Image (cartoon, rainbow, N blue to C red; front, side, top):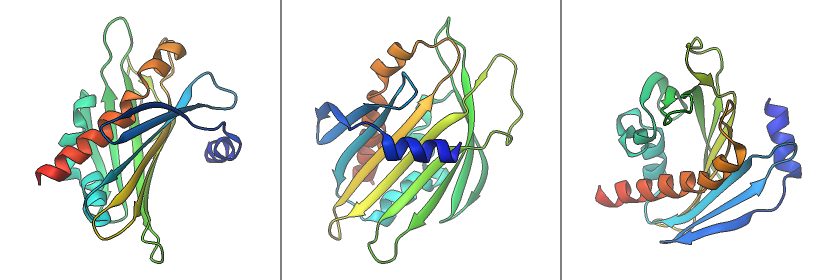
Length: 193
């Protein structure tokens, strides 16, 4: 699957701006061989890179994004390296809930100061459960580019295939809210600290 995602990135369509509000820009684009779109959110945040990455990777600070899940279980964590979760997305009837186990790996470029966190599914980490659709096509990437000591260009990109009976056209309509709400919530938490 990693080569498939890499090839999608190399030959993907250009990004289309679909939302520009409160300093957060959201883009979508068509992906090759799929009717589903990927997303990209961008904003400037006034906080150091290490503070932002700690908020994203700290298992004790997951309340800022955990409201999108009906279940969120920490599987494993190594500070400054990786974090593994099992999550359940509760969907309204008549749709079937989805679940996924993911691993997010952190890397830092010591020369540029850019920090990236890439999440991918870990399919065998948790046995599949009856009544759930397992998400197995997923990728999310945070890129934190420092511009100066207190301003960081934050980019959140991702692709998810929810599988099952969720119409692709409906998923594509609600897709832009994912990066927007995630970045907005992160910014609010950073400002309140």
